[in-house]
Length: 277
Image (cartoon, rainbow, N blue to C red; front, side):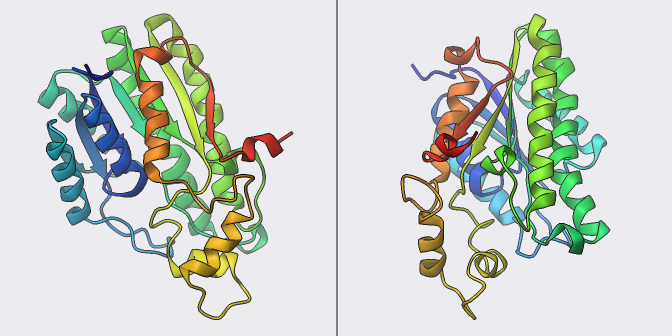
């Protein structure tokens, strides 16, 4: 028997990358899956975002794992979209037991050089988007007297990072938000936790803009150039996590095994946590 048999999970930003890994992993553990994604560009993001084709591929993979899948185009920045996503999930599957607030973007720049649009988009997607997804699902979980809220932050939310101040600020904010929610929902059998991954092997990392940030001395850096830089950044000397490693942590927090864990941050850091004060 899978540990999430009969449960229903809603995942934001699930068209590819970490979100897709969460969808497939939770499906393998018995969840029916609802996935939403913007599936469109954001002007200040310097790499292509997911598409509706990616969203359809996530559905195919979930169904191949033997579970039902609902896919939706929705914008976490828009309250009505998040309310509609929760409503559609309940209409399709009868309930929502797990929220994975995963949608996120990345862009770069020194704080003194960030323009308003770049800052605003980052906060809107990575922090306000998490808030709007959580706010939409909490009344349903409270009425059910049970649920699991899991938000994606970052190991960047445990430190400062040059040229990523807006990203780091948003991810620190996610931790504070979820800890506060954990206190509010605790009497109702609902837990709220955060996963903080180190760098994950996704399209957010593998693009020319990110490569240039970490290898500024190379005219056209390649994956192999960046791999060496990342490998030096953590004690395990691995460049990045496989998305499935983060998804397994999410599956644990979604399970009954984690029923007494709430208000916590689970760091999937390849040893980086040991370097923090």
